[in-house]
Length: 229
Image (cartoon, one colour):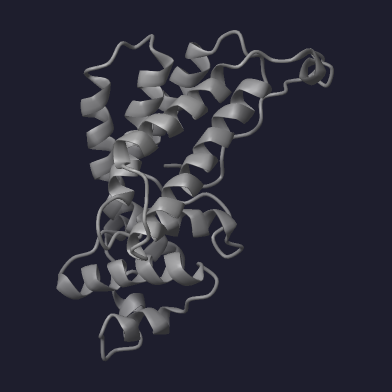
């Protein structure tokens, strides 16, 4: 009896989902079995994950369905306050909710996403809600609009790079918090990170890089195969 769109129903389903998020973050997507998740969640039924979610892929989709709506909502609130022509502010509105989530105690979501990017089991496109896909599309379109001086494929490559690097930076801080390590203040961390990524997005394309570009074919890379933060 898998739940619609991977949404958990009930305390045990939520416990299974949060346990899976933690185990995936700590051991990788490929290194965790559904039986291990059920055991760690305290379920006496080794098939509990199958009962509530169906498969590992559906469980992964359920984790996104659980976490992403709050990120999308927070981004919408931040976007309502910024100058739409400000590249730094637009990037901050997209990234800040992720960094805030990584700052939360006992949170493993960002490290889970980092592991998902490395997974061989989770290749292919995961099911995403219309709201999540719309948020991602709006971000990509705005980034392209705000750096018109950067030609393709460099522009799309840079957007992907900052998305992936954002995941790694947030996941490192998330793990440091969980381990009780000393970290720089949150405000300094966020501001420095966004400064660097904004500079990377807006930097002029060098003659050395332009030497590798051609204009005879469409150089825009294909869409990302995994949900991005």
